Length: 98
Image (tube, rainbow, N blue to C red; front, side):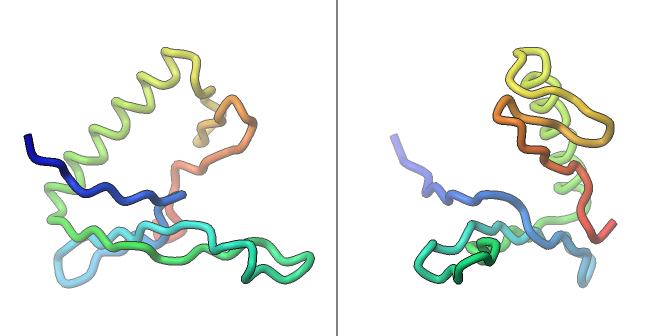
């Protein structure tokens, strides 16, 4: 049985369409040692996923299906165009690029 490499990311950063391909930056919070007092933690790019528009649309459909499963299981709650986790943090469903 082969093992696939795993990458952890806190969220997706920038999502762009360039050269006919969709580029998604995966980002994570920077370590607390780099944070100055009173300053919000910064997001650092970890990896970029590049896929065709068709592949992106199929992935988007799969993510929508997973969100529905999370809502149905009571793990997250819908709120307008956002989904709120049980911890109360809102995750926007919209990219700032669209």
